Length: 316
Ligand SMILES: Nc1ncnc2c1ncn2[C@@H]1O[C@H](COP(=O)(O)OP(=O)(O)OP(=O)(O)O)[C@@H](O)[C@H]1O
Image (cartoon, rainbow, N blue to C red; front, side, top):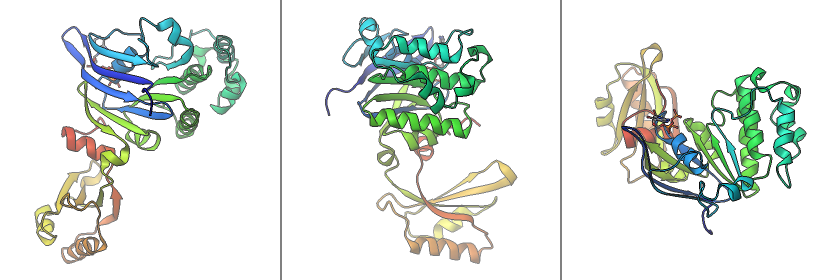
């Protein structure tokens, strides 16, 4: 692989007393989706806005397509697409007119009508920005970011608050950009979004990278056995019935006072075999536990985040 499309090294950003970004490094290659995943306030937007040239770093370096986002802004502009969390479209601009205007700035734009169609905005083409719904505004900002066929695209929370259909349309468009060789850098606090869409996930917490890799590298493709049960499940008793080193974790689940039980191996073996499933089932039967939804599944990025930071990725 050649020079990464985006290269962030030891980035620091402070706002007065707050250190939003505390020495962050990662790269985003061309032809790949790189997701900055982290809870609210982790420093994702600050990082992306520095890459976009909208904010200056206090320390560290950022290179986009080999250039400095601030010093080389004029040269970068036609080659980079930016979708801001706040929209960035004048409130009176009509959706279709705005996209046609954006297209006119580029040598080889995507046809505005086809983008409106793709993103479910065709019927809103004549509607002023301020009268669009939040989700429509977001999709218009996405369309404006990609219309010039950029080499690198920055998308800040591209699907926050979108309905499932609009989210899927966004994901399909992002996957197409990636397949066309574009470097896509997006921020998200949706674990599913990072898992489904990203080739590379950079998990950020408190302005630092806590993990970086593909989803399967981060989860180490490790399996877990999970089930739900009435609260009061005796995790210790279950543990003693299982092979030595097997981990049993019981997490309180909000609804109905039920508990989620997670059984995982000792780290030497990443798979959950049928013997272990049988032993857990037998123990449940003998102890009057109804293991609802008993299943073997791969560890999720949510689990990885919890393990690394001791906190949930999602806000309660
Ligand atoms: N302009 C600003 N002035 C002061 N503090 C700021 C400013 N922008 C961000 N912060 C603070 O910096 C920290 C990181 O914010 P940032 O928006 O970069 O995180 P984030 O991961 O993108 O979160 P979110 O998903 O909520 O946007 C937060 O504590 C935030 O309150």
